[in-house]
Length: 236
Length: 236
DNA sequence: CCGAATTCGAAGTCCGATTACGAATTACAA
DNA sequence: TTGTAATTCGTAATCGGACTTCGAATTCGG
Image (cartoon, rainbow over all chains, first blue to last red; front, side, top):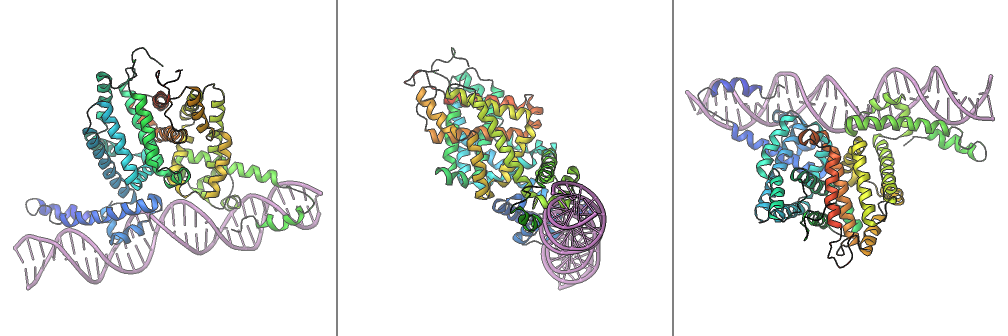
């Protein structure tokens, strides 16, 4: 509430014509320091277990100061989540761009997700936690803001991808682009997040790295999307 | 720690030969009362937000008494989770038993999951939360106990299902039963849990009930599992 | 009715999030 | 270089929620 009172009053006055963003650089640096410490701790201990005290200690910034940057722990979570989601989306987009056919793009996207699962497991786990706990109560504005960034990044074109795929014959003809897109994305993301959450547990029990399991799942899905040799006669 | 001291000492003595399980009935009833209140609250407010005070209030049992039944909130969560998982597994098993071919069984299983998603969304959401937050730190014993129950119930036969399917020609011949089983189960469960978590949000945005999205996802997966016409064996 | 088992209540501990606020420090404009 | 606004520090305090303690009151079964 009374967060940046100092800035909002006195500084606003000065800004009227003089030194724009005087302390901004420093503020930005501090902000990053806090976010980085928090992100690491969330990864290591889970966003529930990670305590404010730990975060402040790790960031080297006192608690009372942290609250001048973020009004509460949730704020920190949101901020990190937005960044993480946006980055993931960007990676997916980049991956998809490298492929030719629609089917190829989808495959590339799935492969990118598999790599995230292998190399950024903690981050994926973090996203899983977030989905499970916060997703339902996202304030609409946040959601919109996030989607805006992500849309530019990749997911949004997915529907078009399916439409294209049906058109160019690489995907089966009986697909409803909109429905299929959401269904497949949710299945892929769901599988990825779940595997990240179960992680080591699954690996210990079944010997395979979880990203292999994910790859097999996406292989099956891709097979399901692909056009039959004799597409057109077949309906389920 | 000092939970059931009364029972462990005085009553243990009596049990030596006399009134076995005297107060058991009542105790069991109380236990249920608490669990039911907790389950409802977890569904309504999430297992994080639901407070002990709320649970005790809703159950009509005082806090100090509740702690004679469960040593802490986590205990309650575990207990409910075990029941919920076991029930879900039983439903799946029942569903699979009604079908003939392996592919049919898998389809029936997926349909049962879709129905759970439609009719027990809160419960599925609950399982999603649990997976995301607790799965990594399940004590092994708990896990074993749960798996024992679930195995009897359904998941365990899934691998056999795939092997059978490959043998009877309803599934494509290049599947690795063990790998595919885990991959597909994780994809299905992951999709189901994710859709339950996002729930209304998804429905509002895209007009379709989430169970339809799930059905489409499983349709695609089933298509991916199904044997090609020219798989070398007869197709279904 | 007796005695064990259970519940109640109320007070209290512990811990983590968050706040309040004055003193100390830092950045920068003049 | 210096005065002042902006920022940080420390520390004490509040608050809510999980969990405990324990003696008094109540309930159950024989």
